[in-house]
Amino acid sequence: MRYTRQNMKHRHLSDDAGWSVPAIDDILDRGRPEDWAELGNEVLRAPYGEIAQRVVHICENHYMYGTSRLWAAFVALARNEAGGV
Image (tube, rainbow, N blue to C red; front, side, top):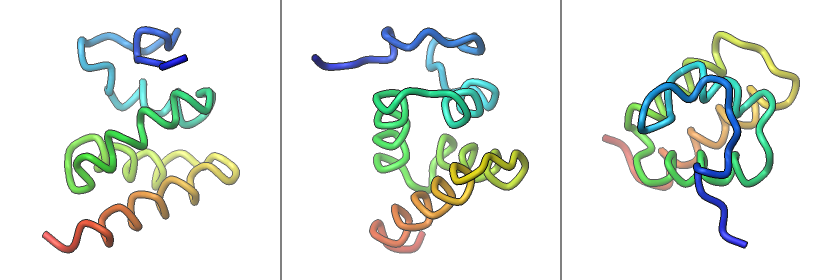
């Protein structure tokens, strides 16, 4: 089964894109693996983009055991793989 953002039942999805800071925070804190995969794909698509910046911001400001360090490292790795901007 292919998952899309339409499958996410999310209390903070208030815009069409669905990637507001509260939405990303909720996904990182309580999301399912398929939610994380979709967010990860967005970060990989644009490692220096707005969504990746939001992920880093959340990780720096909301400590989630394991999650904050994991996602900060994921964004750093994606940026490293993409090369510097």
